[in-house]
Image (tube, rainbow, N blue to C red; front, side, top):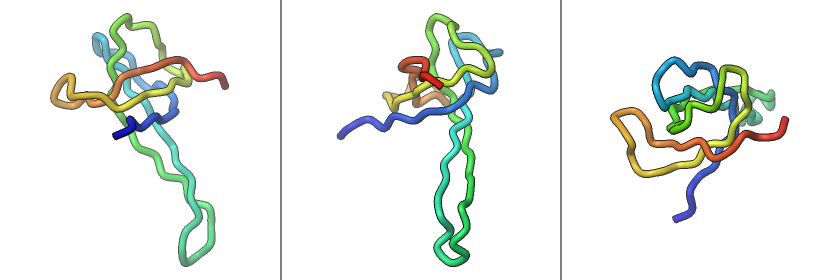
Length: 79
């Protein structure tokens, strides 16, 4: 099964080897036909602590690393 890759913005880097990434998705509402923005936060593994708040990064699914971490930072995305 292919691993999902998402792009988002780092909102927190306070924890060791962990960043919180805010991912936004846009879709058209099925009834109102209006563009809706939904956001979700993911906790991702960052072994070198190289990403800071405000960085745009790509994350990919991986095996569970801890209780809340199921994603790994792949690379910094070009804005």
